[in-house]
Image (cartoon, rainbow, N blue to C red):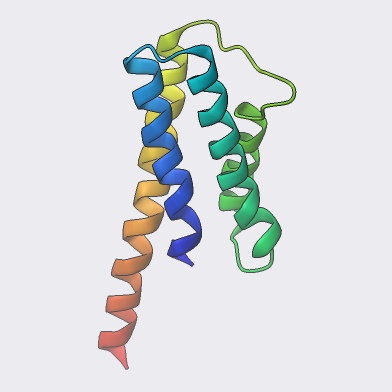
Length: 108
């Protein structure tokens, strides 16, 4: 399950990099497309295995980063905050899933 969240985590890092290093408009658009697809893939591919809160966060991420109806947050600080929140949430999902598997293996 944790493999599904790795692209979203990478997308959050790319989003932060594009915002912090003042990338071109095309760079920001490509990052939006990547994060949007990375958030949509787990929703479509593994809807039944994903928990409710993960569906909500993935959906919000997909809406926020959608490349069709561009949502403007108003400032770089808002995009940095969104990137950090997404990075922390999905980073914990990726790392937490690994730790849960190890603890479940110890119980059996």
